[in-house]
Amino acid sequence: MNPPKTSYPGTAGQARKRILEAATKLFARRGYGSTGVREIAAEAGANVAAISYHFGSKPALLEEIITGFFEDYSRLVHFAVDTGDPIEQRLRQFVRSVVKLFQENPERMRVALLELPYDQPEITSVKIERVRALVDLFRSKMLSQLPVDQVQAVPLHVLGPSLLGMITFHILNRDLLAAIFGLELDERYYAELPESLTDLFLHGAHGFLERAHQSEQEP
Image (cartoon, rainbow, N blue to C red):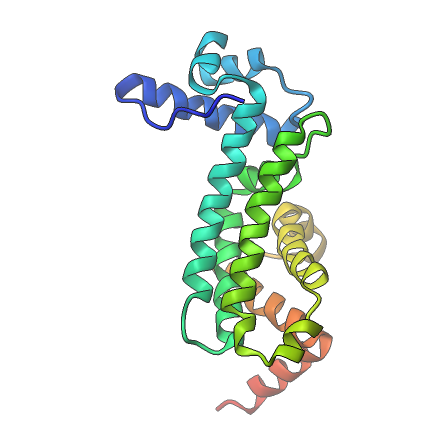
């Protein structure tokens, strides 16, 4: 796979950005397999040759979308966990940051996390590499505070996907959830969502009852 070109001055750079945005939109709405390069070119106001020039191929274009998303994701993880705060505070900051990233980039999130073409093993390899790096960072920065026996007892292969799955479900289905539960998807909602998800992740349903009790005790 040809490596993507990373910078273009002037109109070339703008064309490249438009192609990335068009591909992200179409992959998110139609799926990678159902989207052709001609459709991407038309959506971007470019020609097929421009896609070949800037990215080399459709798989390389998908790889760039995934790589860019995980780079942003990785920066957020570093910001949240690379501190001296207690584990719970770092976890809360992590969830807040991820909710914000997903909220502001729902189409990029959908493509990066959900698109996995079975006939493109190199895409699978990219995802494995990126996610493994995040898991290693999480393990070294978050779990290093725990005793060794507790670290060994933490099933990251269960807990990690569970937390990410909760966040992803709420963002992908936010309009549906809003209609069902009569929610307002405003600043207050997005401020409360990460706190609720963190409480649920750390303490289960009991965490909500405990937080409600604490609120009642506050003057």
